[in-house]
Image (tube, rainbow, N blue to C red; front, side):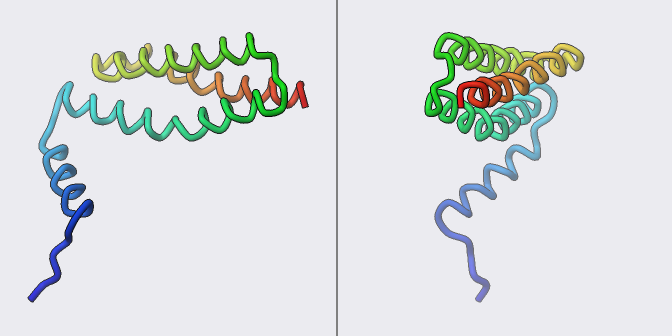
Length: 108
């Protein structure tokens, strides 16, 4: 008898199977979500490091807010299939964590 996956593995494969059947805006929404999840660790690290070393809280907050706004706009542009806008806000979202690391370096 073949071994069947149980628990989270079977749920994950069922979800992946359903997602593979999507196209258009729903498929792009899944792509936007996956891209946001991939971007989160860099931002989380930056947002934790900056205050830990005494970076300017006003500038840190501004960069953190800019990241959130860029990620929201990126998701909307991704679903709308607006390639140029998506690339611009993705770049803005990518520069915000590096800005936070830069503030941390200047403070440290």
